[in-house]
Image 1 (cartoon, rainbow, N blue to C red):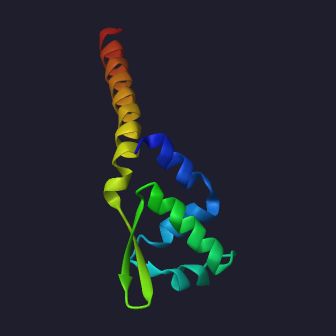
Image 2: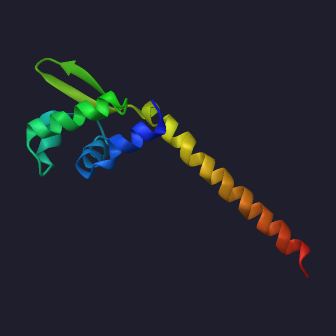
Length: 103
């Protein structure tokens, strides 16, 4: 999995909203569909995309399937974004050093 695949999976606003709805706790498709402007089958399709991108896990419980965020699925994206933060901090440090050397 690469950060680009994570970006692609989360690019769709409905999919992102479904993903964010899982932050508090695992939920079933029915629970997720109740808060969405799309049908239950559409929510299931979005969950399949998130699952294939390793962003959610699914656990069968009786006749239901519970979906949960796979935090480790965000690691590539986190590493990518942190590389920008390192650049920003480095530039900030250089600017501080430059200002200390200027009269």
